[in-house]
Length: 188
Image 1 (spheres, rainbow, N blue to C red):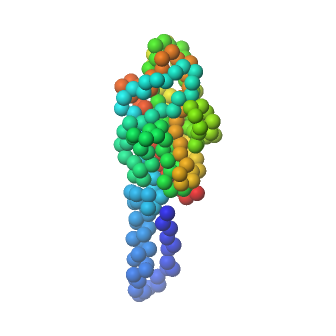
Image 2: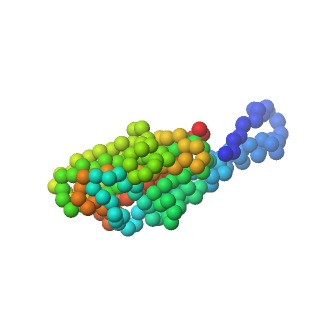
Image 3: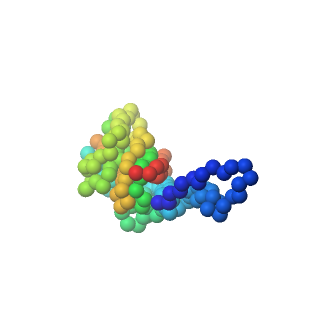
């Protein structure tokens, strides 16, 4: 990750040095970075088809089929589609919204972000990411996870998992959002 240090203040009549100009250029690149060179990981991933095979009363990781953008290539739409893997170490902001369709109303839905989890359960849950809701008589509901901040080392991964007592639950982008966003927001 690039860093820069501002030079000393210039007095009246001082000439601007090439080093000073390079500092300004480096600062502009850092602030407007659109690649991992400057640690600006940014990814918006969505699911465009219904996710089948989700069982009732089982923690299930949500897979994402499309990246609206993935600046640092942290998400792969064909391998480990549930995961975003940090390229640069740092603090990250996580957001997610998952719409489920199910066959009957009055169900409980729980979700959370997971860090380097193992299996399809809540092992590795990230503190403060838990969301829970009880639906009424509807057969569709969107669970929005709270915006969560987490420190990641390069190579660590995060995903979102859902648990519900619904019969035949289906993450369903045709009924609403099935998406997750990950954004690098600061140095470790």
